[in-house]
Amino acid sequence: MKALAVASGIVFWTLVLGIAFFAFFPGSDPEPVAILQIEPPPAPGSEAPDAAAGDPAQAEPAGGAAPAAPAPGNFDLPPGFAVRPSVPQAPLVTPDNQGTMSPTAPGGHGELPLAPAVPPAAPDAAAPPGSPDQQGAAPESTGTQQAALEAPPAAPPPPPPPPMPEAGTGPVTLPSVPVPELVEESQYGPLPKVAADGRRAIDVYSRPSRYAVAGPGAPPRVAILVTGLGHRDGPSSAVLKGLPAPVSVAYGAYGRSLQEAVSDVRADGHEVLLQIPLEPENYPTVDPGPHTLLTTLPPDDNIKRLQWLMSRYTGYVGVTNHMGGKFQATAESLQPVLEELKQRGLLYIDSESVADSAAGNIAGTIGLDFSVANVQLDAGDTAQQLAKLEQLAKERGAAIGVARASPTTVKQLSDWAAKLEGKGIVLVPVSAAVRSQAQS
Image 1: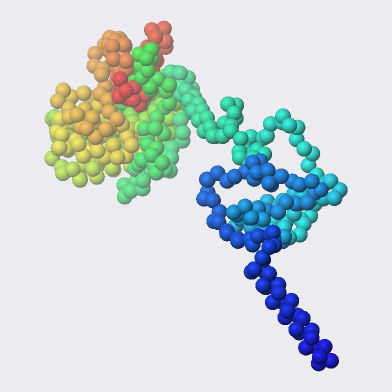
Image 2: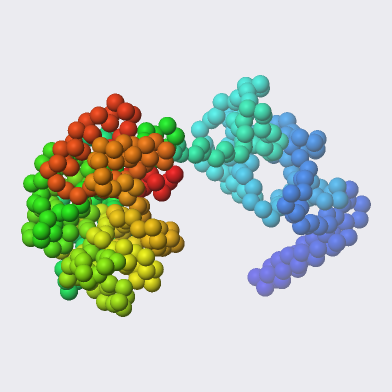
């Protein structure tokens, strides 16, 4: 047994040494020694040779055997050896013995599960846009197929807002007052303020009118402000019966049940202004009231008086003066008052025009909605004054007239307003006239 083991060992090592010798010293063996040289994969974007299309050595041999990959330097590798690129490859499809195609796993190790057979495309069938062609390159886009996506069309602009419901004399329902967002509680009572969303009293409490916008071809606009209500010795609201709804009304701060009276006239379609007393030239011989704003008071005291006056009721679009020739001519006294009105979202009407009034210059500087009454309708023959108002409206586009409340005045205004349509003139609220004048 020992002899047999020794003989077997000698035979084994002889074979090993012989194989090693012939591997390194092949002698006359026609098969050359293969020297493997692995080159790095080509850089991205470089053109790789198309083995399937250009190298005849890669053509599939007859009999269905898979070709061996060529070794670099034109040497054939021994059977079972292959040089593979470092990047993953798609499964190779080889014909099996039945003539069908079986996917082979990358690296040549094992087969992948069979996929459903795909019928070959017609030779002249066009590849879908963006898909690789048979050479592995994406086809060029044609004139009808654009790779770039066009930007979606811009959204259409929103439709313009509908016109204002006011045609001049039609019925209009004004919002009930007060609007909580426009009210500031103070030590005196409710004061107007600009809402958090920017709404102002002039926007919310005014009577709407489509003629507030001054546009080409707009008819002449006239506005009437009836004053003298809400005073201790003034007439009651009953005097306004029959007054055209677009006519605006001013209430003072000394009457009784002022909020009820203001709510009633607003229910009839009239917009309301607050009438405040200002120092006249002959003060104190002529005294407009206990809370009159005076040029002899410091600005803080006048603001306190103004706030007391503004707290008597809510729902007014702005303020107008009661007297005030001296106060309106004193810029240092008037400016803080007009700034307070601006901050609270109100307009201002100079209802008793003073030749040297500083109101216009101050209002223009601070951006206050402001206008001057062009005609005092009861300062003479009312019919003539109304004709003067019409003429000014034709010349300027809009004009404002002021008259004190009385049964006679209301009757004249009602008869006059009924004839305006035939003259091509429109009766508008005061707020609409102020806005249209600011635009012209």
